[in-house]
Image 1 (cartoon, rainbow, N blue to C red):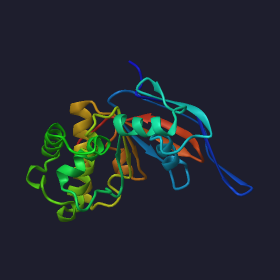
Image 2: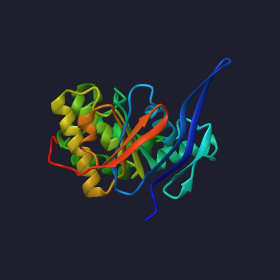
Image 3: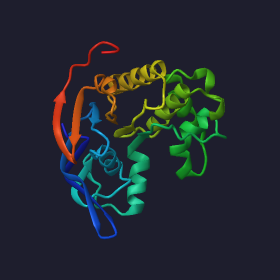
Image 4: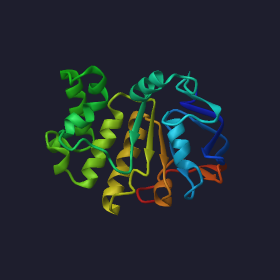
Length: 236
């Protein structure tokens, strides 16, 4: 079974004038299909930088990245943008929905934007995904009329719109109350288990990490530990 993600020797150094800051130091990271992995670390550990590199939002200073069998660290900017749109899904702490768009339009956006509009097929898939995340009665609501938890469920549906190989989530429950956070975690776990979607979740929350099948801990720019966990009952 080929890994969904194979990152090798990832290093990242930022320059500010004459000052160099080494944020990542030879990180190796492999994810297999269907994993639900938590990426943990204190502030400054490099976890957000690593997630941005895997998401092709930053280029590493050194190292190689292969996603779903394709070497991506050498792609041009245009190729990276296309790969990001078609092969990766993103869920952010703040959902970044388009406020004047309906839930359906927001979910369809990753497919509709490159095509110049929403086709009937795109609309059907978006509506199917919204039904999947429990928002059948909110499909035509503008984003401004949705609660925080509902907005994050729309964001999950949007991340799945193009059938990505890998879904990257950056503190996906960080702006939610505990009840809404539990609903979002349940949903990601359900999609992971039933659809086999692969998730890498960047978090500082041990409660979120406890709901994942693997935890990868970063410290001072290096992988400190990798531990497989047993998915327990809800709230474990």
